[in-house]
Length: 114
Image (cartoon, rainbow, N blue to C red):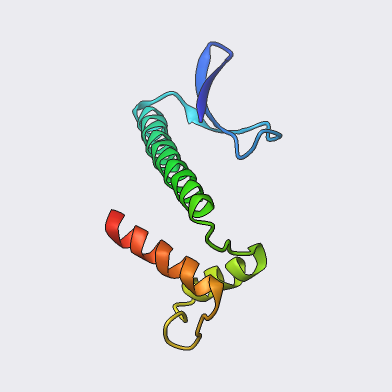
């Protein structure tokens, strides 16, 4: 979201992606100012959360490499993620083998940080 000046009037524009030309939401007003401020605030919060998550993941990667622990493969991780979203882990699905060690450790880390 950003303001663009056209014909001596400022308009709030929303772009969905880098290739998008943008959609004009409306002329500058208290409502568009509030929408822009809310967007900027939420974006900053999301960026801070993402940075914290990246740092946590980098630390976990360093620990796993140092301890030579098994790594989760991409396809099983996607399946486990979908099962978790469907709330099936621990009820209708059982994980065994090296992936169990990985998931148990990650669950403990999340519990400690939460």
